[in-house]
Length: 345
Ligand code: 5GP
Ligand code: MN
Image 1: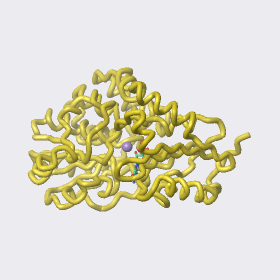
Image 2: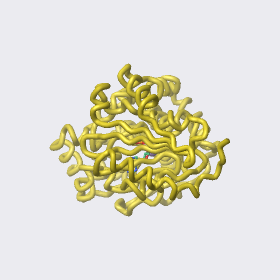
Image 3: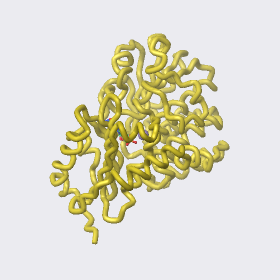
Image 4: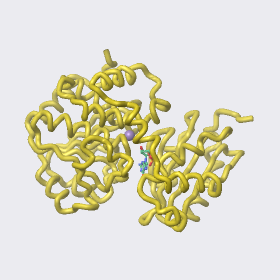
């Protein structure tokens, strides 16, 4: 019923790798989001059900807002448990890399994963993946790595093994990367997948509530402050930029995940085609970008901020001061006017 993206040969090769190996590690990009956890934990539940010794090892801790995803307690964050994480990776017979296209997105885990001698599989939906795995599943038209996880499970003939926890993890990834089926999901296949997930017992309302509609009081105040005091509109470029420095984050007791959704809020402003959010993190300036009308924010993030992503949702990291980062972005805005296809009046 689903359009076929995965060849029989590749599905068989993946199934063989799973069948032949016991210790299987899933990993994902730094600062994990719903899709990173959805895809890794989706495989985790499937493999546990198949009797494998499955582990999810991630570069850094997941935000509290995703603690509801089944299996979140079992995540091993390298930033917290270095030795344990390294041992798990060294003992792995197979590593499944989810939701990223370049090893550098593994941050401090990059060398450890690259140096692991076992076979590796990539499950991703970003453009132009690096060639660092033995088997690569990469489809940039897909909504999420979690959608691809579902398709792979189906293509391997393992849908029967998918339990409610597995389906809930996968649904979380789809719901978060599509913002509750509002972006990047204009094709019928995705709704067939949602139908199958709901048949497995997934409580979609709860996922939406937990992942997208629940914020701490501090987070609501931080976002309100940012929108009211720290947003600049560049009307002629149809761009919006929000900037938060360390002292402001401290003032609102910022915790990981507290600024989630902020960059989308700026995109709601009439006449705005793209929005950027620059946040002064301890190690770098974290850049987040969103757009509408096919304005390529991934291009800007790649050109200016060592980053990338999708055409309408991208990000990067800048090593320098917040002021420099802001200046570079603002000075570059005219270069991207050519991509503005819609006149706003
Ligand atoms: P967010 O703004 O939610 O952090 O990230 C949105 C999307 O942008 C992610 O799903 C990912 O595809 C991409 N992205 C975010 N940060 C980075 C980064 O530092 N490097 C690259 N290459 N992509 C990023
Ligand atoms: Mn994703």
